[in-house]
Image 1 (cartoon, rainbow, N blue to C red):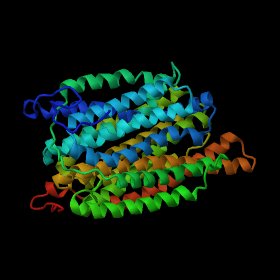
Image 2 (tube, helix red, strand yellow):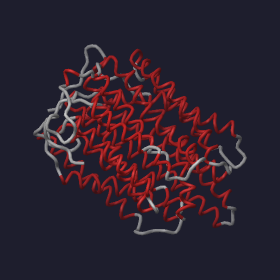
Image 3 (cartoon, rainbow, N blue to C red):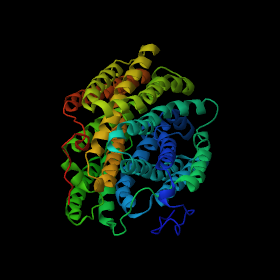
Length: 495
């Protein structure tokens, strides 16, 4: 779908009344619901991976591209959203996002094999990538700073709970139908969101028609993020005997491209023409929060893809049982998210983030104890602890990061947060699967049974994740409340 550079009355989507006649709350409500639906699809492949591997005759290292490819596409597209949200009306951007998601869902529903299924996931991700920055930017523009914590608590339900519930939803559907139904069941909801969008979505944010689109920045961004994630994933594929290209090529190429991307943004931002304005990092609060978001998202998505594999391939559970075992954690995070948001508005991030990271790190160490004899009660308890800890971290980190920026950098801050989340999620997924695959392959090379080899690989992956999460506890000590919520302080605008 093409974004039109026109007013709402002449755009390619249905005409909308003026912004003044509309309550922003309605727009935010629809954006939250729509974002929940599209983000849910990030992790539905976790539980479905084993049935898809069997049905399509693919390895785990290949199958994980259904999740990694989704996240990688988002990491490539999200940097564009800073420009899109500056240049085009919110209404047009919303319709483009939901149309792409709906088309991708249809492709996945009718996919006859892995290649078409992966293509559907990529198109889905292209629409999904736009939704979260769109939601962030809208909230930052219409919600007062003193109430952002509680609103970001609601958004946390989208960015954290939706992925956490993905395995449960997937397990319930797969217990009564094959993997195609994962897409058929979502398609009517996506279409309904488009219809409601024609009625409710209004332009509650301003645009900057003179914003320019830099093609070279897009190319460098895609090569940079794509190369790094492809390289990480290729390590896992190498363990299964499939190495299409030497691993060092995408890793080095991606690193060089990212350096060139950063240098170009530093030059372009002097003329306010950067694809991603890196002056957001002049805020120490923003920079620190971004580092913690990387660690948290890598831990969350890495565990979300390994837990179903562990429960199915090591403990032998069916998909429905796996989904039900992961349900309490997702529900817990959803319940505490608004509470954490209110606590943030009252006390700031420090008394929330520190204990949250301690609990999350402890849960990761608990996962490192999983083996073929681990009890179900312990697995559920550790998963609950992980979601509890992360629930106390997400809202304060995101609110602190975005709230520390001046208004003219909101679109770029939202795009950077979204990009970092997805790159971290993709890297965490690739890293955990890689560690599992390499360790399992080494164990089987010594004659270990496949079940014990897989368990050993999962143990090593969780062990590394626990060490990284523990390091984040130290960083959490330095998180502070956004300057615009502290009397007498503020962030100087970057010119």
